[in-house]
Image (cartoon, rainbow, N blue to C red; front, side, top):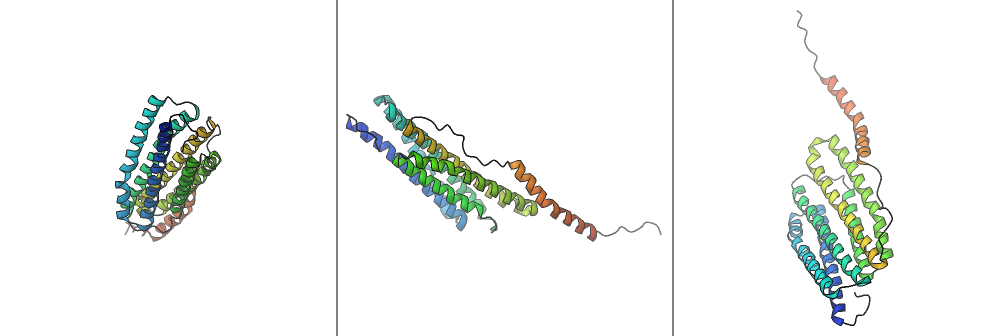
Length: 264
């Protein structure tokens, strides 16, 4: 949506086309993210393959945005809000393309995950998926409405995704230490969680670009980040697993047969 009328009406149409293309990219990437999470929950490899195969659509649109913005910069020589509009669109298209790539990565790992027995105890991953999907929907609405307040609300909510990922990391690490047979499945789930966490980071990038577009200045606050380090998580998991390991060692010691004396 153009923020002001220009003497040359075709300029307004070009800016409108640029914004519509960004929202079209967002719609496709959002659908990919939704289908990728459904393929994980339903263990649907066919749906996951559709997500992977449709990734080229967002790539093509990103290329279109890049070409179009270069043309606008060269021919229109934009200033002030028009320049910010074009630069923000170029940056946002790159973030959306990365989000679509992460959705494709989740789908690829969903195909591999479907070959293994299901782990019922992992509840954090679906929650992460829903949180990231809602953040993405809200940030696209904020872009369409040029609503910097809504964009900053999304920016602040990224901390929840970080907390969920740390919780998932702790949960799966403990499970792998208790049952080494689950390492492959848990590793796939950890990669999925990392993909969602990175998608959340790109959504915060979009929020910052919306703020810049509206106000003409960057966000000076530090990004909200959950402070618990992975070292602390691993140490806690080891501490939790240690008592169990001690009990197992004692049981094995009791069951171990005594050596017969060589003396007659």
